[in-house]
Each structure stands twice: as structure tokens, then as C-alpha cells.
Length: 204
Image 1 (tube, rainbow, N blue to C red):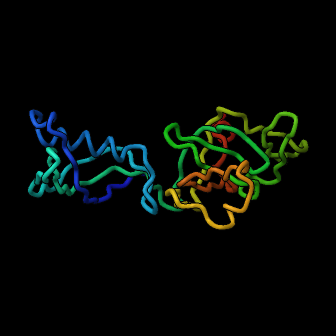
Image 2 (cartoon, rainbow, N blue to C red; image 1 turned 30 degrees about the vertical axis):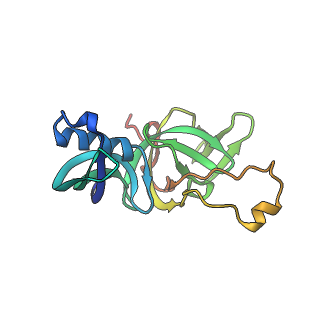
Image 3 (cartoon, rainbow, N blue to C red; image 1 turned 135 degrees about the horizontal axis):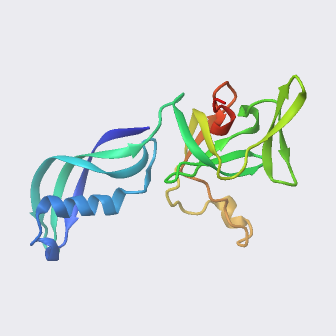
């Protein structure tokens, strides 16, 4: 679920931080810059793990700050495909079941990846697994807040960097706001034995 990623960056330390230890200042600046940010095709940055190398620091004319090239390792959330995770149901919609890990919310289990047969209850706004028994179908509701075990089957990165307006956008109405896309999304599946709500598989 978590991986260590080697990175290189130039860190600017303002003069009022010169009295502190250099490593402490760099640690703070790197976490301020990267923590809780999604890096394209890398994952969600969590926190600094360690600093592996510090190169010479430079002070440029007109800027009293020091600039240091830093080699470091960062903890990144990037689960591998087919990894089994446990989260909580954040909500349900016709698009599927939305799952949260607490620190990461952009997880979707689409309808075709649910335990089948499944239906969406419009009144309750929840997905229901119509579990077949000898006595007939038994509805198992996927309620908000329930813990769910799922398999990661796909991931999607979207480059959300700011861009200039295209000619087509310039011609469209200014009242239309572009749809906000998540920079990093996971697709899950619970369509196999042992996956789904933890309460479904507890031993009696």
C-alpha cells in the first residue's frame, strides 16, 4: 500500500531559519511542499522518510535564502494492482460504491464489480446484494460507514495542472464550470468470495 520513492529537489531555506539545524528546516519545507499532494503517475505523498544526500547550498544575488539540492526518500500511497485493502463505505450512487481509507477518498467500486446479483435501492440510496439462499433471496445492504474489503483492480491518474483556455472553451459560455476531476482514483472490486462487507463473512 505504501512505497518509498526516491526524489530530488532544490529546497529554499529563508534566512530566519538559518539558526535551526539544516536537516530540520529541509524536513519541514519538503513536507510543506509535498505532503497530501498527488504526484502524477507516482501516488499520494504522505511524509518524508529520510534524506539520503545534501549537496552544496548556494545563496544567489538578490535573495538571502539558501538553495540546497536534496536527495531524499518519500513515503507515497500507491497500492499495487490486485492488492486487498479495507476501507469504509463513504456513500453509494448509481455509479457504484464510494470507499474511503480515512486519508484517501477517491475509491470507486462500479456496479459490475459488486457481488452479483446487485441492485441500487433508490429510496435508501444504497447498493444491495441479493444473496441467494435455500429460503430465497436475502437482501444484504451496503450501508454508509460499514467496513468493506476490496481488491484494487485499476488506477487512474489525471493531470490537473493549470492550463490556458482552449479556443473551444473560450467560445463556450463563461457560466459553465469545468467538472473537477480527482488527480488520482482507484477502482475496486468485491465480486469474489471473501470480499465485501466484513460483517458478511464473520464466522458464527
